[in-house]
Image (cartoon, rainbow, N blue to C red):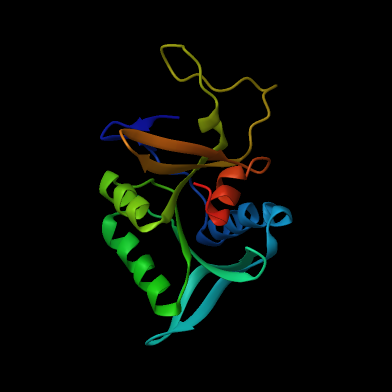
Length: 189
């Protein structure tokens, strides 16, 4: 799996999957952490009402924190050939404000421009790149050999990228490991 030479935190070639398959995979990851979250439920292709009318979102989720606080989460899935730009972060932030949402998550098959990650981090929006599961296999060889057949890798994996003082924080997501999503939803990132 090659990295993008202009933004090495992004894949050079986005993973191929249909928009519906992409959105359902993201919903599946969100729901895998549901057993650790109180009152969690997620709706694929939802509509939320707020100032100015109805807004469509790829995934609308709700959960309860702190013994009763109802948290609204809006999730957008960007299945495109170019990394997500700041404008798309601003659009999600606008939807959050309009509907009284608390948390936003952007998932992308092409990754994110650096400015988008920085803006999302400043606004409390999670950025997750969805990758081919083989991305998790690394070796020290000169070329990128395929993983051996005995290694069981997921079909898809995700990587949450967050800016920190002087660097980046990254968390892996796959069908077995959704801790990064749960930490974000609970406000522990």
